[in-house]
Length: 389
Ligand code: DHB
Image 1 (spheres, rainbow, N blue to C red):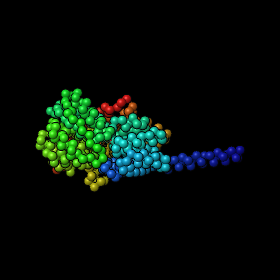
Image 2 (cartoon, rainbow, N blue to C red):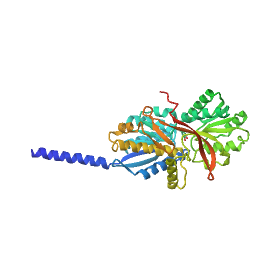
Image 3 (spheres, helix red, strand yellow):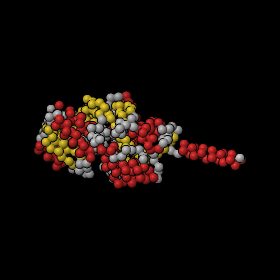
Image 4 (cartoon, rainbow, N blue to C red):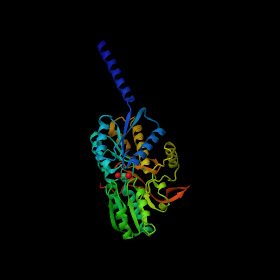
């Protein structure tokens, strides 16, 4: 009897120790970001946003400490995959996040599936990404969402003959395809489709070709960080003066670079899900806090993807009492989330795990001495038009 009681006491102590250990063990979020290389500004924006979110919301959720681990993939898919493996196996992260480029997200998807670790895509924007693993949830956007909006707007606003110029990989191909489909549907024309390499692009020969073709407009998709180079060369060639309009997805007039693009950018119309001057109280608070914490740096759409991604993770942690039930429970708690983001109302579609959000038409204007993408129209609650199932 005595032995039995002792055994019970021992088991109780052991059990309590295990519980206490679990409560003390931090929940780790592993963000894999391009902190160096061509996409370094994407990493910088998302890191700043994630740190701001934690500064505002604390580093404890449901009594469990949250730890952020940030790793640099340099924009290299093999590196992203290897880092994901290390984060899951060695660091035992509960969630993976980040993914600054489509190939980085696609390379990592099998790790999320095999380890049943939710993977929050905060930047990459090719439609197929969410189909690469049932553990992927997206808080960025898709090029299909934005390009359909522009393919509807342009032909209804006197832009009938267009040349497209896109980076030659996933999101660029999506942008080209969905823009063209909608142009044709609206009795517009795409007279030429040009693709420029993702790595170290030289836009000059492509722009020369566009000048010779004299379309009503040039539609551009380039990833975040490349827009200023396109704008500079477009203006240097006097293409605006030759009567060719510049349009595109909002990656072109990225808030991270827009203010340095000069007055030549005035009037450029783009379609996107986020502008730093989106007129809402939530956004104003976000932009002010972000600038204050980052030496005046203006947040761009990457920052918002990171900020909202952290919120999705925090809410899932709350709803699973600190991550109880593991990756599958966390994933279930991410699906169907709905809240007001700095970009407006957003929704994580439980079926597709992709984001449903407003897409805005915006024009570059000067406000208080700075260049901004000023929203003038909205298409509400846009689901990704690029899903294959
Ligand atoms: C992707 C990267 C970007 O920087 C961007 O603006 C849009 C899409 C991507 O690789 O998916």
